[in-house]
Amino acid sequence: MTEPAPAPLEPLDEDWERALAVVAHPDDMEYGAAAAVAHWTSQGKTVVYAMITSGEAGIDSMDPAQCRPVREAEQIRSAALVGVDTVEFLGHPDGVLEYGLPLRRDIARLVRRHRPDIVITSNFRDTYGGTFPNQADHIAAGRATLDAVRDAGNRWVFPELTAEGHQPWNGVRQLWAAGSPEGRHAVDTTDFFDTGVASLKAHQAYLAGLGGSMADAEGFLESMARATGSRLGVRFAASFEVLPLHL
Ligand SMILES: [Zn+2]
Image (cartoon, rainbow, N blue to C red; front, side, top):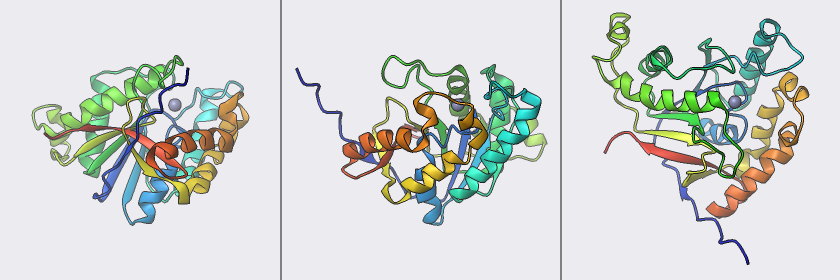
């Protein structure tokens, strides 16, 4: 018996100017979405990165206090390769990230400060599509980002943000979750595939500490981008689940 072909993907909306990417860890954008970011910044769009944690619990052989500055520096270099000049670190704890009001407030503040058209996060579904379970921080980060985008637009939620001078921002049109198993949209990353690989390889210390297929930056990204590309009718692509924020 042959499996049914995966459903074709629709092109993403590219009629926007500013995006804010909010993810749990340094390297989350680089496992698939960074090539898309390189494509957008090459069009003159602005993309800002915000890391909720500094990934300081991500290298077994390195104490978190020692690891934090290493991973932050790697993320800043990685972002620069795809045309992202602003990388913020929110300083929440890696590995034990909690969904809750403090996290929502911090992300809502970011959204009000950067006033993006699009907010990007990573997959926050329970799995990646098969049986392999998602990681707890990713789920908390994505859920909190979705809720914080709404909080950012409501003057009466987190009124302390207005007192700090951050006016409500209702301009986010869509939230995009990269690599979600519910992804129905994609962007052609063929011309930026190599840039995406370079941006993942910039996480040198992190990759050196990893085993398994995810340590092979090029091979891992290629198999994912090729499978997605075949559903968009191009060589390589990155997929996103689109959650509309306005009816
Ligand atoms: Zn992660």
